[in-house]
Amino acid sequence: MPLPPTPSPAHRRARAAPSPVPRPSRRHIAPLDGLRGAAVLGVLFFHAGHFDGGFLGVDLFFVLSGFLITGLLLTEARARDGRIDLLAFWGRRARRLLPALAVVLAGTLLLVWALGPPNLLRYALDDGPWVAANLANWHFVADRVGYWDSAGTRVFSHLWSIAVEEQFYVVWPLVLCLSARGRGGGRRVAAVAAAGAAASLVLMVVLTTPADTTRVYEGTDTRAFSLLLGALAATEPAARLVSRLGERAAGRWSLALAAGIGAYWITADGQNSPSLFRGGLFLHALAAALLIACLARAPRTPAGRFLAAAPLRRLGTVSYSLYLWHWPVYLLLSEERLGLEGAPRTAVLLAVSVALAVLSKVLVEDPVRFRARWAKGRTGAVALVAAFAALAALWTAVPQPRTGEGSVDVTRLGPGGG
Image (cartoon, rainbow, N blue to C red; front, side, top):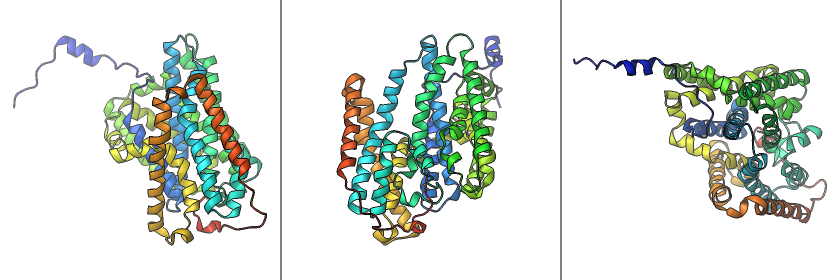
């Protein structure tokens, strides 16, 4: 067997040199699309009544959002001497999120009006304006809408998590503008993210009551740690720590973390797992942040290749619209209406939800994000105001059902929320 060629001195020096610290960038990390796909699959099966721990997919979404958004903002701050164009950032977020949300709000209201029972319409009319204002989570908390047992009558109950993310997108860039400037900005951002995550955990532990965990589960302050741990993973100090791992070590950690997260999903059981609200959700988010950091460091390891497989990745690319549409579909296509139950009904629900998500991406999301020139600048702002004015007009045009009409058997609708 021939011996391998002897490396040159220059090659030996290059191989011995430490690898550069990977900085958050705009490079596409395919396994993270697969993580989105896994997260939305967990939620879909949770709401269909087949997977008690699938609600943790929302937590995974939060961590991913914190990581990706912070990476983009820090990249911009480095390129512009610590400055961030907030209006441009908020404009991009609005084009990404609000068109699909507006279509789901209008489409769902019309479908519920035409097909749903009166109490479903009554709650849709009550909840919709708060969803449009991205305050749905606080609306549900103030109305004491029990997350775990009342969502079968609330067609927009799953959108509490969208409100949490939108509130984060408003506040966190402002924090970065103040902390990322000048020398040591990356360290300051990391310190702020870590301190904020710790404070959020303390609030969750202090405010948790066994009778109803909705306040801590849906409160922006008590869920911020998931977004902030993702943000921490995107900072340069965190990237420097992860860079010390070789690719093989990062691959082993990715597998171990993914297995641990999967095991936690299998054993978790919502409000029947009190440890979730006394550190369990925090540890889950921390594991997810570490997994994301390892995948960003070494995306071509076995765990990365599995998550980058085409089915999961493609599901991840439509995960936002799929999340928006699935719960209204689940409530409207009841067992009675379909004449199906169990796995056959779930197959129909998944097929309809995916079809609507693909249509939303192709006809609404992508055109507004990438091709519609009118969607930017002042014309975009005017179009946004006009769209939500039209939503408000629709809300006033739909008549309130008479009190006492109709009912929904929530026990036949599967777990609620999301």
